[in-house]
Length: 637
Ligand code: MSP
Image 1 (cartoon, rainbow, N blue to C red):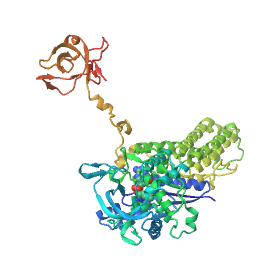
Image 2: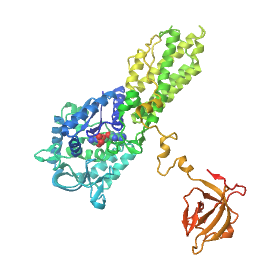
Image 3: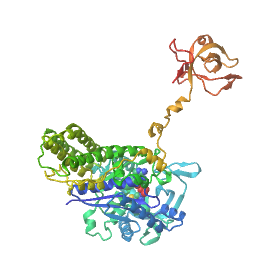
Image 4: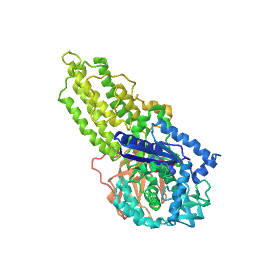
């Protein structure tokens, strides 16, 4: 049996787990279940990153020890993973002894090799990213720098004795590795980013801190603690017993897949391979980099204050519904904006209307017309063969998408097939077939075909919807989860089950949770920069007016004073068009004005509105020409 070792990032324990963390972990769980379905011996690792200044500070603020904070948060992560049916095989904490000693081992190895040396670091540090900020990042006023990764200001200049990793020596080797393994990072755009980053040149990297106490002591120099990223990345090997280099390590390393979001790409695709090269260890085979879940156009994160707590959704929806939404809605590589409205619509449409309904209609008819057991006289037609063929074409397509981790596309195709099955019911009209004795064998053929299609599809859906898949299999008294068209025997019985995805009305959800629903135009209408709502536009009252009189304003070369008729009265305007328009050209002409502009005095004349004109780069005005029959007072809208 081939092995498949996959990992999630280990999460910082200063943050409560939110939808963003859930996304990565659900994705890894889906991959793990899918690989198991394909016959792999899978090891799925997740865990927590517990050292460093960020955790130290966060704990101090809460009056806790760092370990106390970590212990409490680990429970929160584990509890959420269990609720979401995440079946990890191993959970590593960076405070575990096997990790601490393992990190010291790899550190010593690299040091013995001469790639870690003692020096001094002077520069900026971003605590949020636990990132050293290179001096090439420009200083802003006041000596601050902006972290290139998270954009937060950093003014804590550090100057300390520390150990450096000779990263600069690895540029060429890394580039060679990327060239030989062009799919090391997927999607391709992220691989390109990594290559450009390395091509810009690599500087040696500080890998210890003397001022941070909450960390793993440097072997032989306990005044120093190991830099949190060196510590954290090593989890992928310490968790499988790099310390003893036992059989487990031999079996599972190198990892087949590291899953993460784009924020930590550099650490995984540049630093981590370099550390491994230095330690003489094989490199991971692939890194899957997904986008961010945004809320209000910003990355969901505790510091932005826009995190979504999955527990609110879990009050109304099953874990499977959340898993489905995350896998269906976001495409690898792109960022996704989370909207509750979008969530509810997606679940109600796909899972309630299409999938659950297909299962309940089919089982309902088997119960109604055959009392849950068949009479063994099924008759099949070409239509049933088409349903089977369509499945046989669908399955390899879906597997290919899943193999490329394009779950959204695989699910899209699965649901297109589910819709075909729903249409097949309408076409076959089982309710009419049930009316006469002669057509009962046809009815049996239709319902058995639906049952077989459902069980087949259910296996494909199982990695994403594990709980529901188990329920559906139970309904059909079917045990095996194997791929392929499920040729259920002619003789089988069913057991009615509970409703799979009860509908949640969005009105009820928004009223009870007090979450503010999006505006009727949809959330995205107001999001792009510079885009306005129709209501904003309506605030500007523009009308057609006729120029009654026009004259130059004394001692002002550019200004004309116009008396105009707006259809409901006359008023005065002052316009800066005198260099280009003579008064006599304007008298009698129809123009467009903004009628509700706040009046302003120009050269002592009260101007009540503004004439509209197009203007070129040199500010030359062009007054639009309206059709002769446009009524004075007509509104522009
Ligand atoms: N501790 C480091 C990782 C060390 S791995 C050796 C860390 N932790 S973290 O808690 O900040 O988690 C970052 C990861 O959480 C992201 O790479 C991503 O997998 C997941 N996400 C956190 N917020 C997210 C979104 N808003 N959207 C998508 N994924 C998100 O970095």
